[in-house]
Amino acid sequence: MQFNNNKLDDPLSGPELPLWSIKTGVHHHSPTQDNIPDGAWLMKYVILTQEERRLLPANAQMKAGVAVGDMLQQYYADTIWKLNPITKKLMPYANALQYADKQQLINDNLDKFRKYEPVDDKDREKFEKYQQEIIEIITNGFSALEEIGAANLGPITCEEQISIGQEKTKLNIPVVGRTDFTFGGVSADDGSQQSFPSLILELKTTYSKLGKIKKNGERSFISLSTPAAPSFSHLKQCAFYAAKYDFKVPIKLLYVNKSGYKYFDSSNCNDLTQEGLEKNFKIMLSTFRRREKILGQFENKDAHNIIKSAIEMIDPNFDHPFAWHNFGEEHLQRAKQLWNFT
Image 1 (spheres, one colour):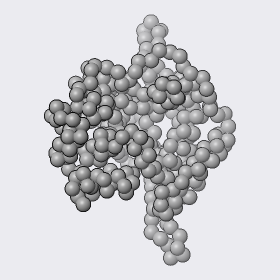
Image 2 (cartoon, rainbow, N blue to C red):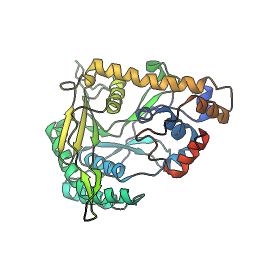
Image 3 (tube, helix red, strand yellow):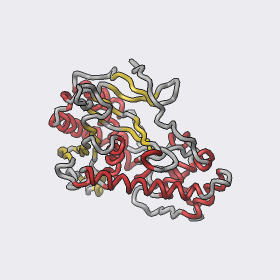
Image 4 (spheres, rainbow, N blue to C red):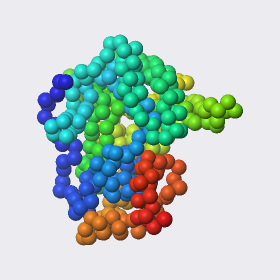
């Protein structure tokens, strides 16, 4: 594996962290954190340790999404950011797995996906279904990237960790995320290369949902069409990438499923225009600002009592349609005890 030896700034470095951040271990925000309500965020990112988060249960849909993303990145990327085993930080590496044979690429990644152990019977039914669906989705994924001429858009970087510091957000801690695909750069008037890319692409894959049990005992599945409009949480994620580059880089949001694919960008989605991206980034920042204020007002207490005081202020919203799904029964019951819902 070849390492890019260019000197890198630590995305998490910056001004001195506030007391509440040091005590609780919350050192950054992210678009992923923004996607869940405050109660689930507090449980996952403040109460659980990093090791506990790593052990949270996955599901077949998440693993299938990773498989498709990995395949597209392994085929197209020149550089992929990965965890350095020595420094334990994300670093850019040359794509040593860049495939020329799409079928071999699919076979290798399907073999990896098949090693997943489903968490329950319903997850197993999805796992069996998605082994075929992945092939249909990746085929559409290749078509989608070929439509925009991905192979000719200059160097392609995947999973790059980017950070927006306090100087842009006026938050107490930075916002950190990772891009799916970053294409090339832009040339200045003097012909030199600038730091701004020419395009950022965010990829979302969707899979068939569980249907009813048929009379013969088999499970039916509900096929999904490509969305008529993007998810608001995905639009806010795109706004974060745009903010990194002062909203001067075009953003494409790509949805792929077994029935086809659909792009959204500034030509067909107002939220992906500069004005829309700026508006949605401000909405994201308001979430982070609220959470900082909740924790910050108790920073003179120890970590245990900061968390205890925050719990008293935050509605856990245990009825949320998805926020608590992947905590596992043990952590869910722990959360209910903390909020006195038992």
